[in-house]
Structures are given as C-alpha cells and as structure tokens.
Image (cartoon, rainbow, N blue to C red; front, side):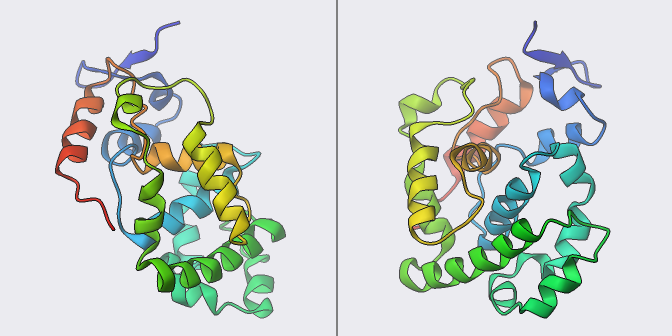
Length: 202
C-alpha cells in the first residue's frame, strides 16, 4: 500500500491525512512543526492522553471545546482546579468525560508548574529529548522510540499521568521532536525548513 495520497493541489501527502476531512489542514499546518509554547505543549500532551482508546478525529473535532473547558490550557489556571471543577467537567458533553483523564490534566498542570519553576519552561525540559539528527533523517514506522520511552519514564517519575510511551511518541511527532512525514510528502520539506530556523528552548 502506498504511504501517500494526492492532495487537492495534486501533491503527495502522508496517507493518514486523507482519512477524514479535518485531517488535511491539521497535517499541512500543524503536525510536525516545532513548538516551544508551553500552553500548546501541555494542550497536545493532554489531548493525546484523551485520545487513548479513541480516534484522533474525535479529539480534533472537540478541540475547541477542550480549549474552552480547560482555559486554553493555561498551566497556572489548570493547576488551581478543584474537585468542583472536575465534577463540572464530567458533565461537559463537549469534551471526553473520563474522570481519570480529566484528573490527569489537572495533575499534570500542577507537575508542569513545578517543572517550570525548576527548568524555566516545559519546552526547555521536553526538547532535551529530541533525537539525534541522524535519527531524524528518515520517517519512522514504530509507535514508540528510545526517546519517547525515556521522556515517558521521566515524566512518570515526576508524577505525570496518562503519559505512556505511545502517547508521548505521538506528542513528539506532532510537536516536531520527530519528523515522521513520509519521504514523498510535500510537507516534510516545509517541516525541515521550520526545524532549521527553530530556536530550541533552553
């Protein structure tokens, strides 16, 4: 089976982005482009956690609802959520109403707040797990990597939840710690150019 599809402009793209109408824009403008904003990083980690057992299409369709429910993933505001907030979110039909995942977002925001105090930013911590450039030369087909295993393990040690290695690997793909656009995808080169001009936090 081919790893690409032909997009509306006649150019090749990763095959997965043809699976749903919402995916093309996400694939072309977000997936794989480097991110250093802590709010976006915690949002993506949270949404990947919510996706566990579900489809990304379901999460993407509800993303604006998630952003509203979780105050645009403002770490400090999330860290102050109480049991009353969690109970309120469990009644919110616009998001995935899973107690463990909702509680994980609040817990992880508290851990992120502490991490920011120590490291300066969540981004500075996360980008330490970027693979060696040689490993980035070709797209991968696995659902985990040595780096996602290491980041998952270290986050868990710090008290984070719903950050298994597969979830973390999907996060690393989306945030451009790994470039998994297939070789023939027209967006892969754009991501590489973005990577070259990206100033890594630290």
